[in-house]
Image (cartoon, rainbow, N blue to C red; front, side, top):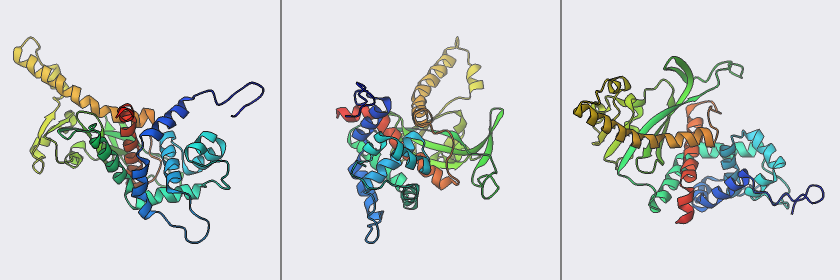
Length: 317
């Protein structure tokens, strides 16, 4: 029991961060994710033995949840007992993972494309629990800003990021395109592109192939003419200007307006994962250079976001 001064018991307060970690500890499928990583993890036949896969995975996930760089994560392990507890680094440990060890683990995940595989494992479990259906999908994309500064080793901005105009404002960075289950709002597919890639160009790649209906906003107008490989029914929103011109006193226009309201109700579910990404996990700007690394991080965050959104159902099942 930890005490600070006479009568002050620090173990009695259940902080929001502790509650969050306890919830995620219960819902993350640790054993299946560890089994996915272990074949690629170094065995450490010489030198100091490597840290367990479970420890490194728990540290990696804390990085994602709390937006910590590799050096910041190393310092946090020294400074925050809660983080050491979550990672299974007890008082008997003679050393803690340094930033190089944390970096190498992240590179291992990137090299073997394990972020996408972890998302697939999470979704397989959610499907087994009946939390993710296959009948329909919704697609959308969000802009992720990238640093515009040239004060770095190369003296240039990230060559794989581009600028695009949205409304009257210019953005520099990348896009995260996602396909979500139309019933639950859980993400099943993630694609990262430069910001100047039009949403419609990534639309078909966001489908898992088993859906019959796909919902999208007005930015996907015309996708029906392109969609030939996947015989699905596209439900694309009417452009806002055209919808404003509808005469609700006209019976036919009133029906069109009601249809748009119903489609909007389904499309709204695609915004939930973006809210978790940017508000819950605080991910609003790319951390690394290049699309591959940033897409791997975003994919991991969406996998964790699926677990976060399903946490109550998972603990009940």
